[in-house]
Image 1 (cartoon, rainbow over the protein chains, first blue to last red):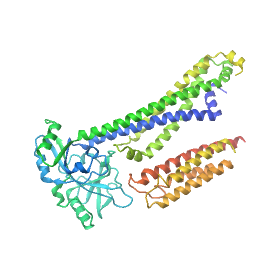
Image 2 (cartoon, rainbow over the protein chains, first blue to last red):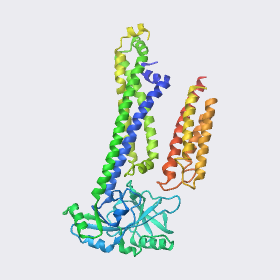
Image 3 (cartoon, rainbow over the protein chains, first blue to last red):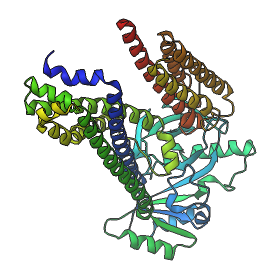
Image 4 (cartoon, rainbow over the protein chains, first blue to last red):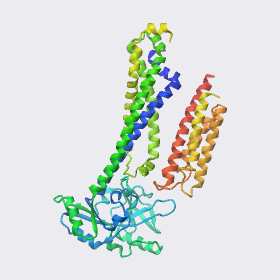
Amino acid sequence: MSISKLPLRNILRHPGRTTAIAILVAVLSFSLLSGSILVYSLNSGLRSLENRLGADIIVLPDSARSKVNIDNLYLQGTTGYYYMSTAKQEEITKRDGIAAASGQVFLATLRADCCSMPVQVIGFDPETDFTVQPWIAERAKNDLSLNEVVVGSKVSAGVGESLRIYGISCRVAARLDATGTGLDTAVYCTGETMAVLLNAAREMNHELKITTDPSKVVSAVYLRVDPAFSVEDVANDINIHVRKVQAVKTRSVISGVSDSLGGVASTIKALIIGVWALSFLLLAAAFMLLGGERKREYAVLRVIGVSRKRLSGIALKEALFVSVLGGLIGIALSLLIVLNFHSLIEKALALPFLLPSGRNIMLFAVSTLVCVCIAGPLSAMVSALKLSRADTGIILREGV
Amino acid sequence: MKKRNIVFGLIIGLMCIVLALGVQTFAKPCVHDRKLMTLLTVEGGAVAVLAGIGMIRPGLKSPFLAAIGGILAILTPGTLMKICADEMMRCQVYTRPTAVVTGALIVALSLVWFGLELKHREHT
């Protein structure tokens, strides 16, 4: 048998020892990959929310504050029901420093049947809109006709399929990109479709919050501020001069989310460091103990002419093979659990959560494998050096 | 009883308990999905029995059938039986991931067990 095959033979001949070390390495790779995917998902969720809000300021009626937590407005599946007259929108739009303004109407949250989540129907104006249409990922055609809707990424209907809302069959004309927030469960339609849905809801005796003509009310006005003006000044101007509304800076919504996200991300990072430190120490201790037990085996190898360098090479190669095995097990487990339970994680964290693309996940997995393949042999380094430098004669005479 | 068979039998048995009890408790599907719940519990129970048999009477049959049971557990929610399409419903958030994760672990462990049994058979 060639000496180069010895490390692999050693691993295969001692399944118990190999399994124990592989489990430790698997813990390392599991914690690193899962933690990295979680932190990345939270960060990309926040970035997506930041981009997707599109507006600098959101103006809501005063009644909105008592109904929803404004900071979490877009993290919840439901944005709530509150309305103000379109006259207010005109009044807001006339203020100085407004580059673009678009109103949206939030209709009641619906639960189609026992097996579907409630969806928020949002009426928007395609003519002025700048927050919905730029995020269309897939579309059948450009214009939205009557009874056609744009759906969030988590609404279970594909482009070209139909969605029944209050008994009305609405054709899905486009699908939006995922944001990892409550916006993913919303259905967007034009004012005309909204009026049809409202009438259908009234016919079905649903209690509605909109009592007047839906074309005369808005729930929120999204504003883009002229670069020559400060967002702060424009928001303050609206809050002071337009009665019964509140202008919320989207920055403040995002910074609230960002603070919570920072806390979660730091906890995950601390956990990864803790698990790594502990596992690394345990691995080093395991290799030291094993080295002690295998003194005679290495002494015999020295006697038959294996050099000190080659001896430590055998020990490091063994550590590398076990690290690859453990690393692959940890990666497989991590992907199995994180990718399957991502909805549960998202629900539990209540923060924007957007999984990385397949390519990025692969990149994370490869990086994790590289890291554990460095950490494994590194933890075995001391033991390997100690073994290669031990006095062969003494070991063999001691008979230990 | 061989140590190897006890270890594999116990771990696979534990996975089956998580699956069978999980779908009755924390991973319970939506109200109308009683059939799905019953089927997954039966699959979990059957694989647990196979793992038990494999511990007492070592052979290739038990790990092979346990692996098939694991594959069935993976395929039951969504492929063999329809579940809610909405991504945020209980079936999708709890039931399906629990069945897929435990099923995949059962398959992986059963295949390793099968391989070791096969190797042992070749040696004897």
